[in-house]
Image 1 (cartoon, protein in one colour):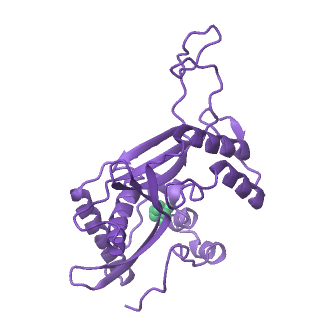
Image 2: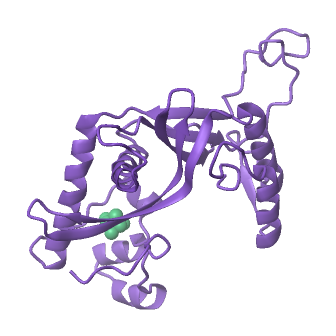
Image 3: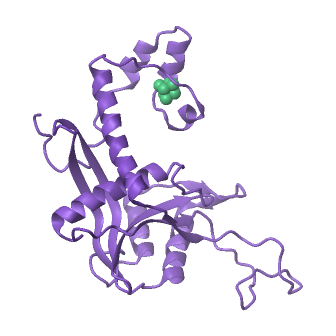
Amino acid sequence: MAEWYIPGTKRGTHPAKTFQAWHTANKRQFSQWDEQGNKIDALELGLAMAEGYVDHFGLEKHIEIIAPEMSIQIDVLDENGKYLCTFVCQIDVVYRNKANKRIGIIEHKTAKQIPNMKINSGYGDQGMAYLWAARLELLRLGILKPGQEIDHVMFNVARKALPDDRPKDKDGYCLNKDGTISKRQPSPLFIREPLDVGGNQLAEIDGRIRQEAKEVIAARKNDFDIYKNPMEDCDRYCAFKVPCELHSIGADYESVLDYEFKPWNPYDAHELREEKNH
Ligand code: SF4
């Protein structure tokens, strides 16, 4: 999508072409499964999604891209000006809507089903943190003028599914073989879901980033008891779940850590400069 939403109002390389090139270069043969559990070839699916996306939204001449993939790095300080942490992120799109001059953020997502994208969801924290960071960065660059705010964070979601190829009526409803409107209509393939934002949430995320940093610093200094909190997210998200389970049952989790893990910096790809020696 970064090749499509290049800076300015003209669009770049068609996402289908980019996806085809990526697929060929990576020689990755893999498949995806749709909502009904049907296996779909990844190339076929990716091309259909990319073609469908451009057919659906068109050239969107009102969208002026300020920056695709904007990398941001911010040193976060406490209320006394003491360094707490470095916040890094990469925002998919920062753009200006030429029709109303408002500046917004777009985050691209793909999902088998259109997910909940509200503040209290897996996406809210990312959206709010990106808004917080982009606001500071755009003010620093002079793109956002003092008193001006980022208008919205827009999740741009493409559903991982092939288009429904049944015949449709003039309103776009899928038809049965006898020409009547089918009771089984497909979910939309593309949606744009804005995250509601306001000054209160900005203050909240501002406080949360600092508080999390303070807790990490305290935990590293052993000023803060670290405890495990097993829950449903462990299975989906935690890379440490195997040694964690071994630890819980009193087995040798340290060997697993020694053999299966090595330290790495997940922020390597995002850091813009050497971390300061604070
Ligand atoms: S699996 Fe991970 S997240 Fe869950 S309790 Fe263990 S260490 Fe914590």
